[in-house]
Length: 487
Image 1 (cartoon, rainbow, N blue to C red):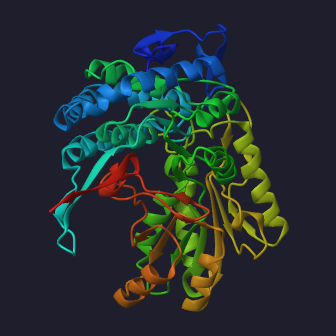
Image 2 (image 1 turned 60 degrees about the vertical axis):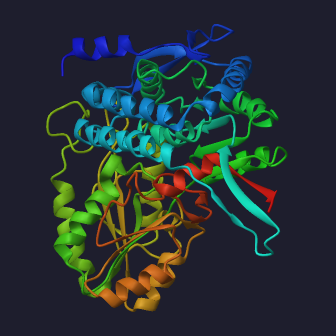
């Protein structure tokens, strides 16, 4: 990839805030810088919004709300479909942009473009399938009409790890439902959202329907928006502690909320598992996006009779990984997003080893430019280790063992989180029992990646509220009205 290709792409990304259809600087003139985590170098400076800018964005969303809600569903859907088509045309630009600002290998970034685009296509089709019902009441004295309506202006807060897919997963159903939005991308990876907003303009989206504010002062900008009575919906993807704070802020306004929060996914391998498939699934579930995914397998719970062989195979595969800048040919592991992520991974590994785990490979930060950490395999991880309780968000595969099915279930459920679980077994009846017994909102049975635009994404317990994607996704942006008419 040439420097000219990268610089031309970065120059084409808007550097302002999108408010009411206009790209503008921050009111105070502040800017923030975006860095390439593979080099530590600044790649672009963009507007750094303050509270005044956030409120201007909400004003624009409120002003556009009535007209957008009245726009025919077919017209809303066709704008989303045009956006999907434009994304396919510009897929290489979006993939490169994500690699530059987030660090993931280019091949994985291309995969995110495909995944993120599916939310545009799926909800372009769901827009025309918003329905209600009509019928007599049981007494025969009247007729019941149940109708669905846009919930109103929405505030969408997206994370840094999947900068395209997390934006489309929220924006697409909101627009399909007839809602206007203010989007606040993460300060670490805001460029993809800005580029997506420009694409939505090109697709014919009316001014003010989507507004984008980038800021380094998330709390100061978000709190006034959330406390404004005109806002009717808050959607957030990120850590559980931040989600709890946002829920508290949303409570006075009784806002509709969607919260996709932290995970601590168990990856359970039984003694009858197909180990070839289990290793393949483990590599995908753990090292996709350099381990920086809420759905990443966090705790590998492996039957003691196969744990040694599984560890041997997965360690051999990890040792074949190619580490480097995501734009380089053949790279399979890029940098972590910043030095804080490296420090966390290092601390978790050191704690596990101190408590008796053995380091099969990796385990250290990589010196030099960028925030790189060695892909790591730990075996014999003991109860009480921090790595079994905390979300790793890095390329560290930690193996613990079990002997009975009941023990495996107890270990898998021994967490306050419940986003996703993975199970490998050749037994149909055992697989069915795991579906019924594991306390997670999603499950991969003999598969290592579960995300799909046509499926409801979300968790149980401290992993969140609501669902994104699937037929369920659009209902997060609709409210129900019941009307009674006389017979």
